[in-house]
Length: 190
Image 1: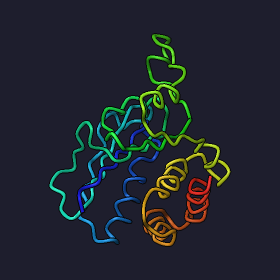
Image 2 (image 1 turned 135 degrees about the vertical axis):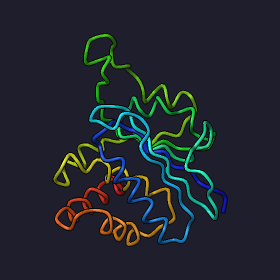
Image 3 (image 1 turned 180 degrees about the vertical axis):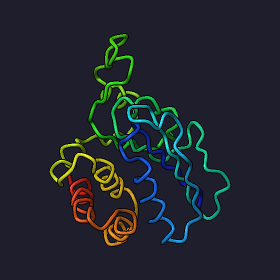
Image 4 (image 1 turned 60 degrees about the vertical axis):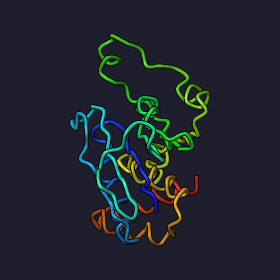
């Protein structure tokens, strides 16, 4: 199998590490060689972050270059737009429609761009954008946005729902398991 590449992008504090850990565990159960990068960027709450997950028969590097990502999973719209040049021509972005103001917007030096979804689609990019925050809140916690996004990403992978659920069980504390399973299913079925 050729190497597949998934970028998980967002803002610090949104749970991108858990999302990459969940995906990595799932891929390991299928016997893939996997490389998962550390978070690049500002890991404190509010800074832009990116995690790379690469898998296949043999993977030599954890880094994804421009034009190589099969999927970009974005926790926030502006982050989706920021990383589009890393997507393959036939790649897909799975994005939360939530908007989180970056520091220049917070301090009044810039305005949050309008029409991001339209701009991405106009560039010919396959965009699956949905309100993962509302689904996470419906599941019981706004912090489950990451798992709702993984639920949506699961629609594009040939893994059973049971395999995903086991990966969730192996990745989250028992006291949050049912909440995360619910968030996953809401994302998958939205």
